[in-house]
Image (cartoon, helix red, strand yellow):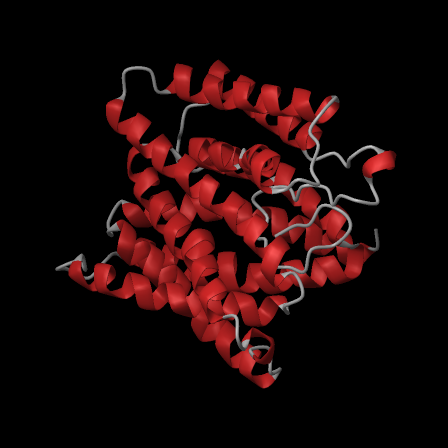
Amino acid sequence: MTRKAWILFAAMSVLWGTSYLFIKVAVDELSAPMVAASRTGIAALVLVPLALRRRAFDALRGRVPTVVLLAFTHVAGPFLLISYGEVHISSSLTALLIAAQPIIIALLALKLDATERVSGPRAVGLAVGLGGVATLVGFDLTGDRLGLLGAGMVLLATFGYACATLIVKRRLGDVAPLGLVASTMSISTAALLPLAVATAPTEVPSGKAIGSLLALGLVCTAVAFLAFYALIAEAGAGRAALITYLNPIVAVLLGVLVLGEALTPATAAGTALILAGSWLATRPAKPAAADSADPVAPAHVSPCTPEPASPSGR
């Protein structure tokens, strides 16, 4: 990769890896709907003017129902569930559970995408990755009902991300990413705003909470999406998707070093199993089937990019 690509790659790994830390800080003072709506609203304020200037919304004509569905499965639903989840579980565990997204995509593809044939290393990857999820939930949250609830919310958000990937692959793969993301952020803000207003704080939040919201909206969402598109253009979607495997590591390190979260043996084992399983589960299909099947897109990478012939990223 070029020097520019390496810089973008490093920046993206940090930008998305830090989002869980900022969510955790924000939900200590603000409601989950307020955090989610603020994140999407700030991002929309940045992205919509850019999309209008580049006429990026033109390609969405006649596809409004699909875009609305995508907004709920990829932005509004997951952002809200992750924010609620982090009320009860650590930012580290949240990032690791979301890293299981490619495993869920591969499982969904068994039923929803007839071109996908999971066998050999990819089948092993599914088993290994699911074992990692079971390790995290079974050992780190044993006897913690609220923790299990939080983990369930995060896994449901991960399921939403996986569904969104397949929606884009089937129906929106030819749409310019900027217009699609600006649209989903705007729709999500409109959907989340009533909940945010109903749960608004009665006192002015601290500077730390406000700063976390601004970082989430401006840096971890708007700037991160634009940087990722630049990375795809510079290095290709396949290499760009490798940030999938670094985001959780950044999140775990920040959780331990900044928030004082515990790094248990189960967390370390679950991390290794999920990342190894995700890598195996998203390996390209055998050459004989390559002409008739696209590999499953890897994970916590936003599906809002045209689906390439190699694993796509966020």
